[in-house]
Image 1 (cartoon, one colour):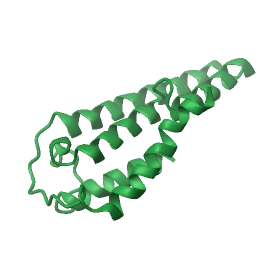
Image 2 (image 1 turned 135 degrees about the vertical axis):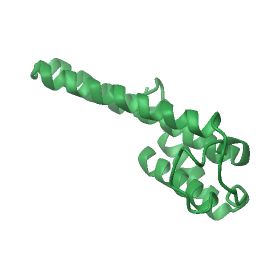
Image 3 (image 1 turned 120 degrees about the vertical axis):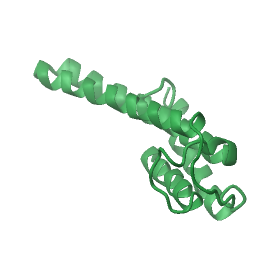
Length: 135
């Protein structure tokens, strides 16, 4: 669920920033789209496995199962490297969304359009906040 939310937020950014798909050019979207940016960052934290979010429980279960199954150490190191790379690229995305300035013209429409905000809001509630219900 949280990956689909990431794609919807990214599509909203791409549509609003003159169809530009380069994250280096469309940075600074948090000032123009604070709600979408908040959902985007919350979902990025979830996909990184931030504690008490839905992604944390799935990543924790996978890592714990593999650790106690006695698999090859190289496989386990590769899995941990994948988790660390997820944290690295999600951190990079958060940097570009909140800190980096934009270099393209912005069409400020998506925050007012409920046909875009409603599905993103529902997915955010389901994919990120439902993680607290697992405990």
